[in-house]
Image (cartoon, rainbow, N blue to C red; front, top):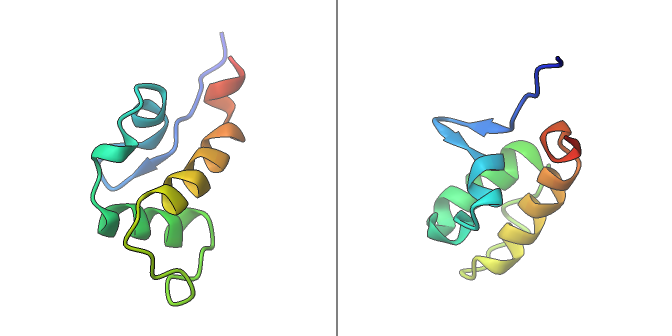
Length: 70
């Protein structure tokens, strides 16, 4: 059996949050930090106060994770 790695930021399991539809529970600041760390998203360029753009970037990231391929 193959081990499946999840995307983790700080203490947050991003893949788990995504699969349970809980990304929207995170603050805009947390979403922004995750995007800057994993999605190479330029925070200066993206100063949205809305969560949707950040959640979209994170959803694309999780879609490419091996945990979703199981």
